[in-house]
Image (cartoon, rainbow, N blue to C red; front, side, top):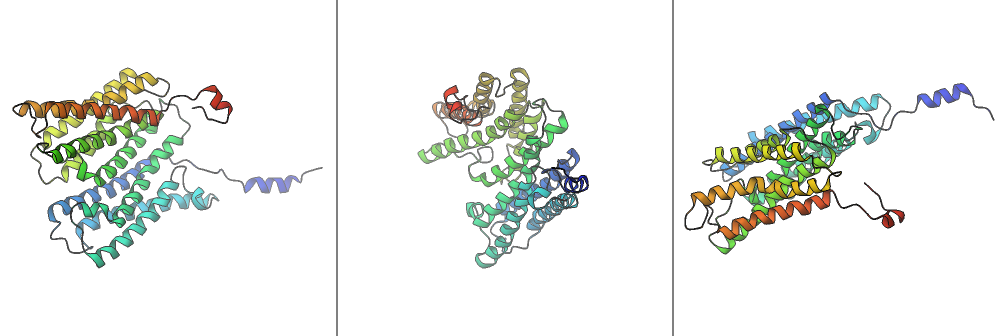
Length: 361
């Protein structure tokens, strides 16, 4: 049987790669418009915290900032998809590898924005925690997360080693920083670095412990996940913690201890960077990875509570927490980090399980 060379040539010319790779510059452009959207949402959060009782309409300057950020992000993601269409690709495959998240995020955010306008028109402007739990706001949050996570997924899939050059790691770090910031924004009511409850009462102690554990887990998870894929460059964790703290504290109604919180977050991040440089925690070095996961939350909470304890009096720290309460909260945060590490990098499966169809990392 013979094959017609002309037919074979025409068939091959119609075949295009399943995915195309975005460049570092394109990742950075995605992050630029994504950070515009992110800062707009934090500005709107500031407005809700300071002017919540006077906001009576959907059409505010604060909404204009983050919706214009969404428009810029949507146009950019659409432009990337158009480049794939010109190459003969269709559907989600037209977008760069990893950017299918962004394409879905555009649709989710647009749906949430339309619903948000209708919701505010019918039911008014929410105040307090209600604003964070509004179904339309949760859709906006989900869409925004998908948008800013596109560079992370793209860099994760790229065929580079753990010690990838800076252009292969920093877009992922900034993408994760934006994702962390969106997540912490939606949990501002329990974010310990914004407003830690006074633990003088039982309810206050319970709230302080819950806030400490939640904040510690959410600050540890992005770092541990990034370490599964890359050997992070020095300064990555420090930058992540500093930017996130700046955004979260900027919304607070009381900024009296702002410089102290900034310094603590930066020093905790830089200390984590030093440990990463020395220990090189990775899936291939599980003991170092587990030990780092335990120490990571302690780098923040021990100086945080110990300083408050020194300022306080009669065995109580500035938040009204006893020595047993705040040291116990630190230990539980460390154990939470350990649990996270086993979920992100689980122990290897035995050979018998692999023979039955299991997958080895």
